[in-house]
Length: 294
Ligand SMILES: [Zn+2]
Image (cartoon, rainbow, N blue to C red):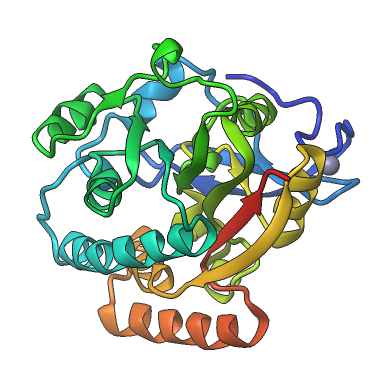
C-alpha cells in the first residue's frame, strides 16, 4: 500500500478523510477517501501499489466491463444500455472531428467502442491491460495492445481523438498519463474523458456506499472543477461537458447491493432523481468531458 503525500492537482500536502468505503467487489475491506485541504480533490489513500498488488483487486468474477457475459439482471441491463451508449459516444467524437483519422481508445475493455468506431471509418488502436479482455477483442477484429508495449501506440502528434471511457480514475500515474495524451494528440485533436461525478445526487445519497467510488480500483474521484483544473494544468481547452443519463440507474442498483438492500424500485427512484437534478445543474452520476489540444 502507498500513502499519497501530495495532491495530484495542486501538490498540497494537507488532506483529510472524507470517509472509508468498502471494496464491494471483494471482501469489503475498507479504503479511505481523502480530500485535499487546498483544492478539494478526492483520492484513494492509502492505495494498492501499481502492479500485482493493484491487479489482484481486479480479479473478481463480476468485473463486468471485461466480460461479455451477462448473468444477473443488473448485468443484462448494463449491457443493453452500453449498446445504446456506444452510438452516443461515437456521435460526440464525430461532432468534434469531421475528418476521421486515427483514434486511440485507452482502456478499451473488450473493444466494443473500437468496433463501432472502426465500422464508422476511424483508424482504430486500443490499449487494454487485461489479457482476457484483449483475447475477447480479437474476435471483433480490432487490435488491442498491452500498456506494457508502448511502441505500438505511443506516437507523438498522431491521433485525432483519444478516448477514455471510465478509465482515467484507474490510471496509477494521473499527471504522466494526461501529459502522454497531450503528446500523442495532433494539434486540434480531441480528448474525451468519461468519469463518475461525486457531486451527483446519487453520490451524495449513498456516500461511502456509492458504487462508483469502486474502491480501491478508482484511485481518484472527480468533480467538474477537478477536471477543469487538470485540463488547465495539462494545456487542454474544455470544449464541452455532457451528462451521461443512464449511469445513475446502474450505479444505484449496485449501491443498493452494497447496502444489502437490493431494491430495483428504490434504485430506479434514486436514479430518476439523480437524472432529474443532473438535468438542472449538469451534475449527473457520470459526466463526459470533451477537451481539445489547441
Ligand atoms: Zn489539491
